[in-house]
Image (cartoon, rainbow, N blue to C red; front, side, top):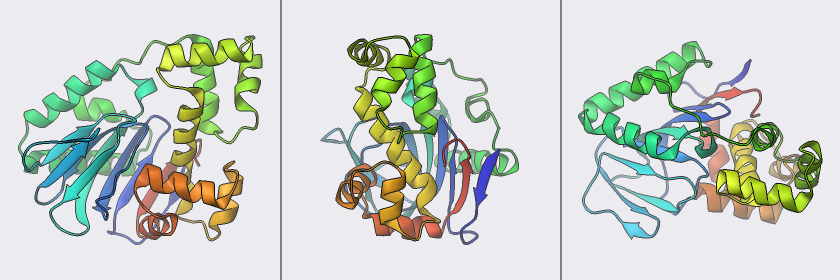
Length: 262
């Protein structure tokens, strides 16, 4: 069952499932951010410009897709410009199929229809967080990325517990692999280093828990960060915000968080 944590009504909305997410609210900074997930950004009002992977995209835009693990910056036309975002974890999809589906979905709609489609998705999530959001978005469920069952099992553990001590060694043992073989197979199957994947899942748990957190140092320790400085740098690198600023936004945001993420 999902945890439901409510901020001030109407300020924004965030849903985090284990493999999908949705956000409606302001982008309050033009600083660079790096998410470990594919993100469709749609401006709720106006247009914006974007820099993705170090390249500035031409022209003003209503929407853009930021691929997972690519640094990107949204250059907003107004302070705190409202956006909607649909978030898909890369290990849970076939990336070329997903990109085709997202681009087709956006191209076949005008801006008002894109915003309306995502707001309908939000209303459905609020009624039932177990909703198949891909089916609502695209009219079908998207294929999952085929993975070695041992790595698939390890990913599930990390999604739910990214602070697991000595995670690589423990997971290698559970897969009946040496640590070096496990790390090699993990990269081979996911295209990512084990450390990078775990860092993203840990940052995702920060988002899930920070809104109700009164002590950021304790949160850092609870999530397995070595110290408060490392925690602050990780939040800034991932979200483009200081930890205190991210917490302030989340406290004004209605949160629906799957209990396996929090």
